[in-house]
Amino acid sequence: MGRRLVGELLRIQRGRLGLTQKEAGELLLVSESCFGSYERAERIPPIQFLKDADNGLDARGALVACIEMMEEEKYAPLFVNWVRLERQARVISAYENMLIPGLLQTPAYALALHEARSTTTGVHGGGDRAACHGSTGTAGGVDAHPAAVRRLRDRRVGTGADSRR
Image (cartoon, rainbow, N blue to C red; front, top):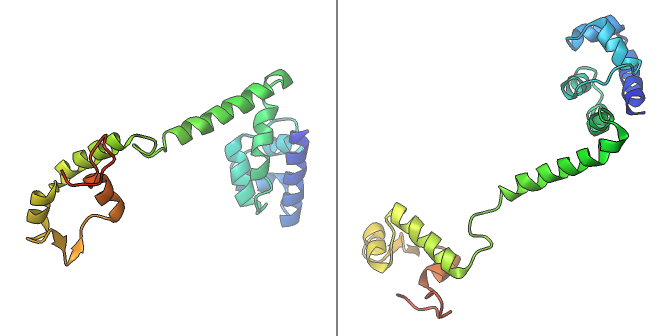
């Protein structure tokens, strides 16, 4: 079913531009017979072809929208659900890698993260901070640490009290 839709879209877009199958094939860098087989729904077009055809034939996203349908048509009906689940797993896996380190961690972890970053930038507690930012510990009269970082930096681990170490 998806092949027929893509074939019909290819035929419509080619006709709209007034191209023959040979001219459309040359435009998309495929042979006339290959383009014809996609148009007649005899072969499943590859994803890159659909993207190129969408741009080359000015289909305005109609062919790109068929990519998922074409991918599912490559497999027997029994395996289509497995393909969908695998695609979802890849999306979840990609999302998992985008989590910010420490986002879901404890206050102790946040403090350790801050201290580790402080040692690499040369900014430690009050004394070193003052050395980096002048005698007052500020940069141009403004505290160099945002309020949220100051709260984490100043909090004593395990007590919940906001007091300097």
